[in-house]
Amino acid sequence: MNSTSLENMQENPRFANLIACIQEVNDFRSEKNKVYSLECIVIMAICAVLGGANNCTEIADFIANRSEYYMPLFNLKDRTPSHDVFSDVFSLVITHELEFWLTLWLEGAIKEDVDQVDIDGKVQRAYSSDDPLCVVRGWANKIKMVLGSVRVDAGSNEITAIPKLLEQLCLKGKLVTIDAIGAQKNIVSKIRAHGADYLITLKGN
Image (cartoon, rainbow, N blue to C red; front, side, top):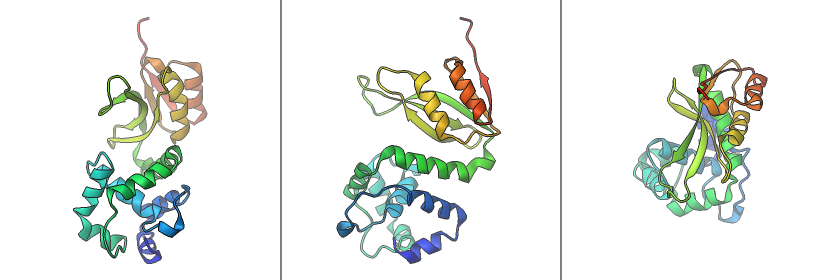
């Protein structure tokens, strides 16, 4: 993405904030072989995932099938990125670093529209039953969007993952809801420290 394209996108405040956040992420690719900027790859991937893509091949296909839109948007001269390009970039980017900055951008973009954050655990589909991907996520029901997620470490449980997730989220002035597993002193203390209220469902035992 050249400077002209960046300047055009930065006229939109939300795009400008997104680009600024992506630029904080370390790009470990060699400058010699870099054809597409990190901003270009990440923004394309976000659009494709929002459009239903689940992996790098589907992301590349999504963008290629809409090349008449994405090539002018990013001033691409020859072609859109292949699935190998997306795969190579995301294999080099530090995942938690990218997630942190994207979460920061997302919360800045929607903070006025969210008054309640629901914390719950989910098992991601497409993983084997022998090694499931378990995550704790912050869900904004009002806008139907995940605000952040943290993987539950093997041999652990949601109690250890929830505090990590709370550190990612902008909770000031919001209501945080959790099921009974969140009835822990350190969890409610962290919620209050962020300037939020909490509602926890308790069990009879």
